[in-house]
Length: 280
Ligand code: PAF
Image 1 (cartoon, rainbow, N blue to C red):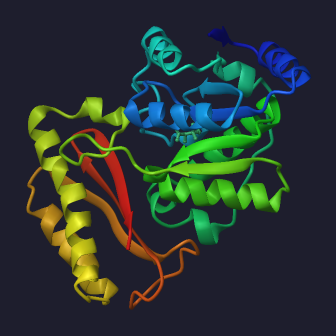
Image 2 (image 1 turned 90 degrees about the vertical axis):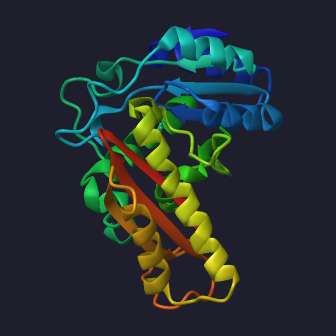
């Protein structure tokens, strides 16, 4: 497995793969890999001849006061994990490689998609995500790119961008990977102390409870949302950022659940802000 730090190097690697007629899969990550990322990579290996992952803690998707500086980073550990699942190359650029001095171009996906849920509590977040993902697509030119359903809104933003800008990349979405007790895997789980980690189980358990209510016939979105809020608030360590239900994939407000709906939440435990969701 090769590790590249410059755009010129990864482009040359891609060029050589293309000469051999290889298809290319890209797994964009911010590193500090976990089983969720490895699942994306394994899926990419099944579908593509060459698998490239990017490891880049993208500064433009962090707001002031967020955890950009403290975001966990460990390239050696990540490289060993990626190699273990057969990744061919890692693209690990420095911030100046992606955003050189004078950098001035950003991608804003319509507010209808980006200004609710995580976009409401993290203004500018999806502008940063769309911009860096578009740049990674332009640099690597993958046939397929792999994203986790845990970031459901991110996937919708990226799909919208691809459709609107006529990008030739197929998006493969992989179901959320969970710990044995239901906690959604996240690089930010390392911030949790044992007590907070225990309390954070309320996220997946409340989502499952909501899904069970819907299966049992409940359709009132406000009631389901309130149930989830009450279950999470029962944990004194939890600070709710949002719990929302929108139609899926359109992200329109819903009063009564008819078609598919996205129940999504973001909750803080100490300095860890965790997200999770379920499709109802
Ligand atoms: O999901 C993430 O890790 C990031 O948002 C992504 C897609 C790698 C862009 O920086």
